[in-house]
Amino acid sequence: MATNEHTAFVMRDRNWHPPAYAPGYKTSVARSPRQALMAIQTPSASEISGPDFHGLALGPYDNDLLNNYREGQGRAGLPVGERIQVYGRVIDQFGKPVPHTLVEMWQANAGGRYRHKKDTYAAPLDPNFGGVGRTVTDADGWYRFRTIKPGPYPWPNDPNSWRPAHIHVSVMGPSISTRLITQLYFENDPLIPHCPIVNTINDADAIETLTSRLDLARSRSFDCLVYRFDIVTRGALQTFFENF
Image (cartoon, rainbow, N blue to C red; front, side, top):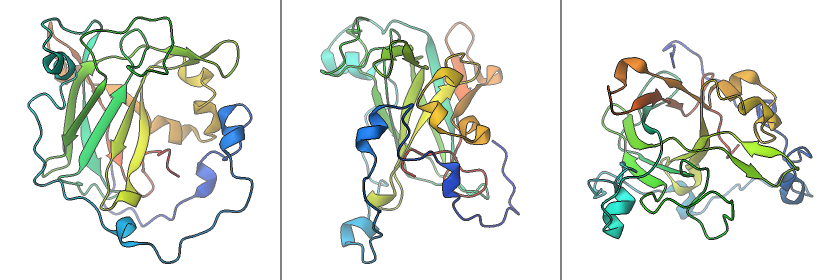
């Protein structure tokens, strides 16, 4: 994602984000606020301070979802599915990197099922895939994960609603209250324009910020395809985040 170092500061456009009440996305109806929101004028210390990840001890497979669950379970097999890598930079609107910040991800397996007790989709669980990972950006804001491309799955929004293949991504800011969460989609997925959640976003450019791009130049022959997903934390080119 290109950035312009001369881009001026851009105030947040709240019209860019979907309404809290979106009947087409049925679970938003019960979760939308019934009363006016209140601004916190005097945040507590926990809201303005945050974790420092410089000393975080990461395991050798924390960002390798092909291996981290099976290693923890003492299994020899590999996960089933299309092997991919996802990489990118965490930057601000001017292209300045966000170094040493925690990036976490979680996803469904290749069949579209999460390893969660409340996921009852008919697709089988993969005994060698947990679906979670974490890493810390380097000094230039780069991150990387190795994983399986998640499958789409049905959900009870209406009789035939399907979520596109996606990965949930969390970026920790300078404090607990500035944690940002978004979803990564894959370019040219035909389910994206049919997703009721995506359709709560009225700006096509905002949807584009959620779409990773195939990077054939970095793909590994006879190993995996590679997708790039840059995360812009603020400004005219900011990634769309669920938090807003």
